[in-house]
Image (cartoon, rainbow, N blue to C red):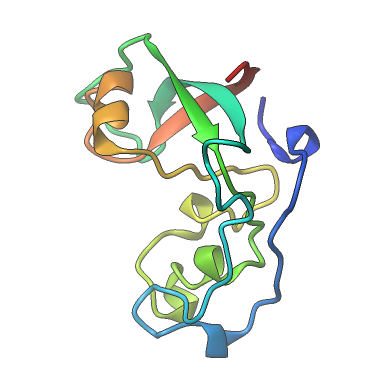
Length: 133
């Protein structure tokens, strides 16, 4: 699956590309969210599996394991939590890693979960499939 948006049910945060919402160092100012403040009672679960290195690394590999994650917020590219990360707004994250390209999902997960998915040092290409919570 390449796009989670058709699967999302519930509140979705939104916004416009407004530089005043960024602190100039890659973070947003006075961001509203998450859309799901009570993680015990809302959110959607997905199985995530590594399919390769987004950065083109040749040392390292996907483990073949799947990690279940619970998504508690859905922020499009136009939300400051995403666009403030890119260099145009003072951040250091490549646009492809911040949901700035159509059909691309970025998912921040705990480093322990990332380590279970692969031995790559950089960013991962992933497969995302719906799962029960």
